[in-house]
Every structure is written in structure tokens, then in C-alpha cells.
Length: 95
Image (tube, rainbow, N blue to C red):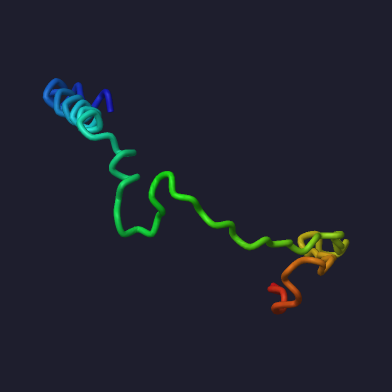
């Protein structure tokens, strides 16, 4: 980029680049982005300081072991203990 600036009247391009950077930083001083994002209505977030209800508990299934096949080292069989909340909801993705 430096050689490009030297060849093509670098002062004008550099001034334009610096002006745009200063403008971007200056706009954040006028109205901070965090204040704008926190008060956006209609996106489904609760108001600041509002008490939230607890989500229901979840117990995931436990991984008890892994079987690695010696003939295909990238093929795994997972031994899962089904003590969690999810009980046989479907078949595993076999590739």
C-alpha cells in the first residue's frame, strides 16, 4: 500500500484515508454504540434491571467412552450413558 501511495499522489489518498478513520472514531464519541444497542425496542430483550425467570434444568447425557477402530482411525463409536433428559430422540448421524 505504501508504494501505491507513493506512485499515485500519496498525500491526497493518505489524507482521505486518515479523514475517514477520524470520522469513524468521531461518530462513536457523539453517541456510543453500546447505548444505542441496549435500548433497541422490539428485539425481545428484557429491560435493564428486570428480573428474569429461571430456565428449566437440563441434564445432558454422559459420555462413558470412545471406541476407536484400528482399521479406520477416523471412525469412532461413542459409548453414552443415557441418564440425561434426552432419551433416544433419534438415531445418530452415521457417515
